[in-house]
Image (cartoon, rainbow, N blue to C red; front, top):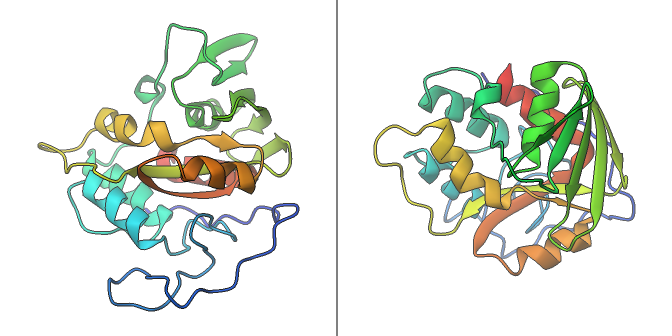
Amino acid sequence: MPGPGLNPPSIPGVTPVAPRADHVGMGEDSPQRPTGTDDAIIMDAGLDTSLPAGVARGLGRLLGDGPVATLGDWAAAVRAATGGGAITRQDLCHTDDRSPHHAVLDGQRYDFACFYDAVILAGLADAPVAIHTESPGGTPITADATGTTSLAVSPASAVFSVGVADDVAPPDGAPTHATVYAAVCPYVRAFPDPGAYRAWRSTVDAATVAMPLAGATDLATALID
């Protein structure tokens, strides 16, 4: 089931980048730039926006398949490849250590290896959740979420990334939520602004894209509903 489209507010201070003639789109021989994207950021942040070719290939290879066209398609493929079920609380990357990536729900703190688990927790709980994380550079980022319908972010310019290592291998057998999480979690990070994301992106051997953090709940919806 493809997820819904994302329609978050524009990122303060960001002007969409004009298409580059040398950008390769979904097909290896295509000269077209994927709609709504630049080299690093999905500017209009839609689940049905075409992904850059490297991200499309990597996310598909992670599932033992060909390129996925969009994040909505990838979310649907994850669910199909892992038995068709939605993510549950037990699938989240909980940690016993105090983590900069944590959530507070009904007064109880939940620590995670990956900040996006806190967003998914809000959707699963369908109750107010206070989300706390840090960028790779140590900048605190917070969000107040209610289910999958509301996410108030500070700073408003925050973005989050999704990606997978350049050398990710196809699964040995059927993929599971655990194997998908292990591959994706290191590259699902939050940043105070697009510039911080781009600086980090240049330091990792991974194909990633980023989108406004204010739209993060829609990807969660596609994974849990």
